[in-house]
Image (cartoon, rainbow, N blue to C red; front, side, top):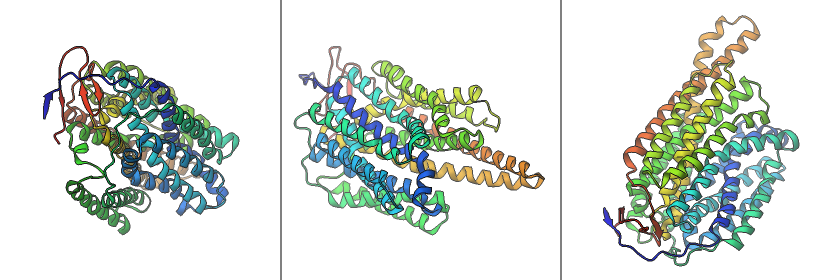
Length: 512
């Protein structure tokens, strides 16, 4: 329902909030970098450690399962223990796990370190976002803070490709792990001395153990199901079993949450129309983006013959677009227009960029096609991500800000797993079909190689068409479901919305 909120006394903003943002952003950059930096180093690490092709996927999967499965639990721990304490603990653990990965001497040590990185990442990520949510209460300042955070969340993956390329090519794959340690030390030390968490914002309710078990197992089954689908096919018995298990476990989780006194995920967090629309549209957008990162990396390295470093730099226009969209367009317009009028058009601009990439061919010019496509993708995603990140945690009671933040990360993590599996399957099927139809007419070995490369590009463009459609659906959901008005001069104070100097406006209030 909606009601007019009377004027209340403004809480004094935290004097150190901008310093805190530096360390929160640094930690977020480290987590996002890790999602892509290891991908570049994987071939070298596989060779050094003697990891088989069949087990190679576990370097990525171990991280994704732990991170995706434990995010809700991590968000609740942040609400219970305190966000600052959880944030610093997450950083310390992530640094230790990274040191273990860099020192790995066999595949078991590598897989274990990646799982540990996921565990501590699940503590760190929701704590970082919820700290921003409770520290930045002024609408205009909040827009700037989330603009910076959104640019890092969106562009960090591409930065990881550049950094991963440099470290792997000029140093050693182990440095893609060791590089996290200075990030974590600086962010943890800075956070410890600078961050002052608002009083009275903890949720001291007892921990919902059945909720923790059901949500963790349900999310792990879901992420693993999509990972299996990518490697073993959608009809594989284990894949199907995982999907069935995830539906049963997550269904049971919702039933438990509706009945217990202190739920892990209060249903009021996700049944709010705005937040529900954001989680859904954000998850869909990530499905489209994750597949694209993968295809473009392979296209540039295998089809165009780029080195890892050159591939990383080829993604720079996307990073520039994301930073511009997030910090310039999003931040400047967020207090003037409704969030859906940034999110919907943002996803559509990204869809236009994706549409250009459906024209990819072996001889496609980087400057003529890839560069404008990446700029549009970055601009669109940056413009859409920033208000989405802000609105997902706006108006949430401080005691729920950890789980609300965790849901943002969960929609991204699950979206990433779905995107990689779904779009890879579509691409592989189209490639196989193309090669089968054309290989017979190729007489020489060089012609056969050309057919295989054409088949790869055909696979990528077929999958990118689906990504275009997914982004259009994400835009439709954002425009339809997200109905919050412009933030204006509102402040978020103790989970309620207080008016600025202008006038009173209706705001959504959750009924208790």
